[in-house]
Image (cartoon, rainbow, N blue to C red; front, side, top):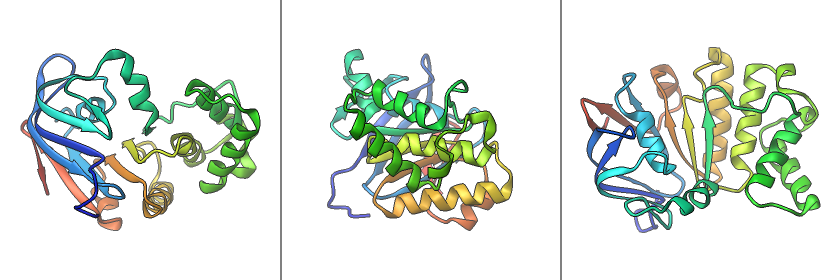
Amino acid sequence: MNPDATPIVQFRAADISNGEIVVVEHLDLTIYPGEFVYLTGRVGSGKTSIIRALTGENPLLGGEGSVGPFDLTNLRKKQIPYLRRTLGIIFQDFQLLMDRSVEANLRFALEATGWKDKAAMAERIDSVLEAVGMQHKAYKLPHQLSGGEQQRAAIARALLNEPALILADEPTGNLDEDTARGIMGLLFDINRRGTAILMVTHNQLLIKAFPARVLVVEKGVCREA
């Protein structure tokens, strides 16, 4: 972490909503380029609401917030797609399109974010699949893959637009312990190359095995562990 760098994420006295009411009060949080940060807390504590605030899904009900150049306090609806294109997002349930191959899933994501050059798309898809060790599974359908392979494909999708920040919401929640450790190793490899990662997790064993900065959300407050 370089404290002289421009933060990727900055909240100042931000009131985080679940879409309707405040669930985390007066959040002060700064994440710098290249940081790995865990976000922990009980179910319903507001962790996912913080993630949704970062993607523009849940509005701030007070204070200030920003993601890169985007001001969350005054975020306009037409800005939200552009904000989300600067982020990589990984879900617990993978959220792959089940009726098309891994390669087609990635191509769909590129087209949805404005890519048009077919050669450039093919090159980028090859690059991210190699980065996650899935270059030989490009033509497989999701149901032909293990859970760990599906999550690797989802991580490849998150890398497509070279985000400075990846938001990972319980990315190991549906995986067995050995597979989860493999996914964590991959995420830390990605992080070491300079991509900041904010990861929601309940898994204290993984946090101990892969130590990094930890934030805890409890009783409406987010604090450093």
